[in-house]
Length: 263
Image (cartoon, rainbow, N blue to C red; front, side, top):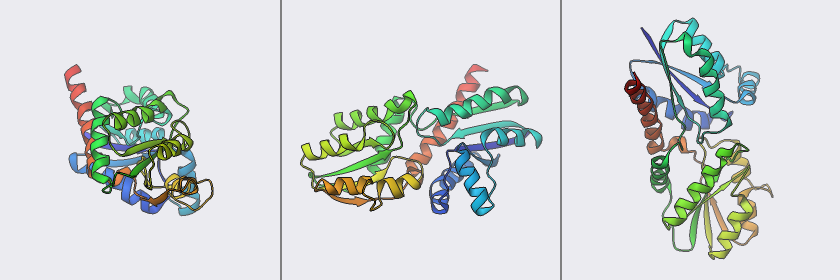
């Protein structure tokens, strides 16, 4: 029986981020399942279209990838999401699986990064691993993407857990809560002198390079600097972190184990 491993992320149009973050996770997952042929899909149609138009690079969306695997005779298919939360993008994948499940002998999906209490603990350990050493008047500010989906609460939950653990990390989100205004207010209240900015995202792409680290007046870097705090940007996505890669491997292993228990 032909076996496949399909790895699905939001995607990125930045070649360096594709290699350093997405491809790094794909290689780690592929190494954990060497008996399977590895495939890639993106959930962002905007990025898929941009790559095709700009670079002539063709990337499948989840539906196209599943159709391709079926047509090529793969029947045992493991899928791992590289998304951070159980939001809209992950739900796109889960919905497509419902349409295709009857066509495959096995079609098993691993959960996104933050899917249970232990995931938060593991992510905190991974952030500590990636963080620079911080003085008492310094903080690492993590920029999450945010969402209109109710799963946006994951960012506030992570921030609360960091605060309860008295760790010098603060979580904010570009498109939801906690927003940059709330982050700056905390920095001022805690009399912070220096901030390190790092994306709480799989890739260091457009949000990290523009919304977070650029000199644009609306960027997080500029807004924090305008409040009188020194800022250093760390433009590295979570996908570069070996502990994050291991989390995705464990999520896929858990999905396999759960299926075996049900069977």
